[in-house]
Length: 264
Image 1 (cartoon, helix red, strand yellow):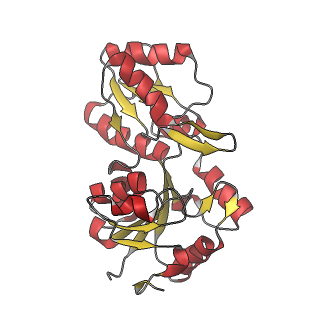
Image 2 (cartoon, one colour):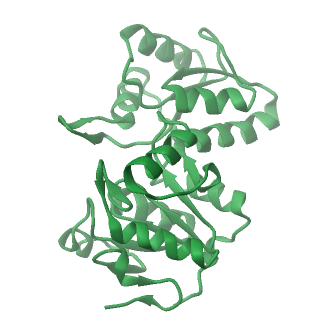
């Protein structure tokens, strides 16, 4: 096994399951901290600020990190557009999304233009309205670049599987007949940005997650080795059917030693 210099780690299904604690994941994070191995939690969530993610980990899961350990799809979208806007100088957006996405874009100097934005960014928005969709669709049809934060069709909630950001993006895609640029997992952008911030080469990092279709494919697309943990979405039977296998698979994070790899 490689001696990985950094870890990219999914949250829900890997470190916890909603409000359910995963003590083995907590111990894994503490092993990384004790060994001073850099890591980032890489999440498709765009509704929360990094400080909220940190508070949830501390208050509900007894995992203590700082905001530098958190990289959301909202931050990744803002960083992606910041780099893109640096080439054009155009920093206007129309956003279908919540505070995590809006604040990330504002922090990079983007301003809202409801009629002729350079970019239309669509993420999860629990207060979305017909009018919000209409403005987004009209702008894209007039030439605005269409950005989707992530393609997750559903998100698990207490009531069941609720519409995810991808469901909102698909409505806009259908109405505009325009393909979006996606930033979050399984696209490589969010991982590439994370590694750039850490100063780590892709071949020196390991992506850890429970979902083959998002976490593992993101790692594959970014040229990062992958560790699939069977504590969430994907099952061994489902993974066995995939053409490209994860680099490693384990039942839970107790079965990973940061020096030797998988252990019984």
